[in-house]
Length: 95
Image (spheres, rainbow, N blue to C red):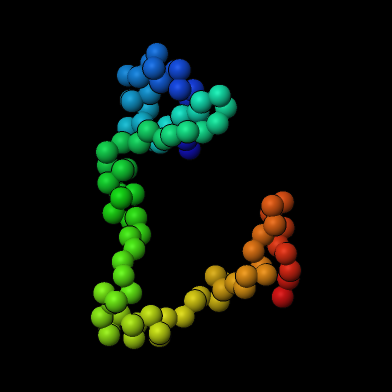
């Protein structure tokens, strides 16, 4: 569950918003549009540790390349580009 507050409420009641962010992410909106989230330091560290970082293909080892070549997509996660959802959420085709 996420708490939603306005940017002006963050300015007026930072202490309360900060306390809320220690329990769950706080969604901050400005003029009805989400512009930021306030999260605890522990949550941020967890997210940062899971963040995927990019690197140069040339930096991959031969073992990395073998692992990539042998990798299989789980059947329940397999998809084709034509399966991507439309703006309304419905698939563009079905198999």
